[in-house]
Length: 115
Image (cartoon, rainbow, N blue to C red; front, side, top):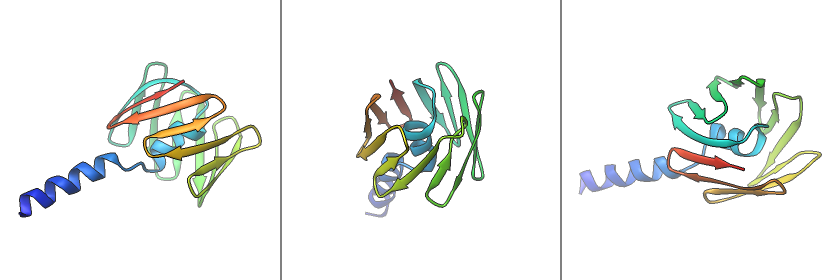
């Protein structure tokens, strides 16, 4: 019984999105295929690392304060519930997908595809 509960907790923990997933899917200006290793996403075009409240990539440094992200290109994105609102788009997180005008970003385990 205890082993089953631990296994279920590990499976659920791997499925839940966190702010690094949110940043890459809804705020980060790049695209491509990404694989997550700890607090880093290794992508087909970039590497993104979370350090405290900062996100560092070849595009620059982004930050998060509360529910507000300032992207690497100085775009402000506010998270409101499951929506990410900027002056250019609204991206809505629904389960393992992030849907906006730029297409649908899909996250499956440690893999993410962002069009």
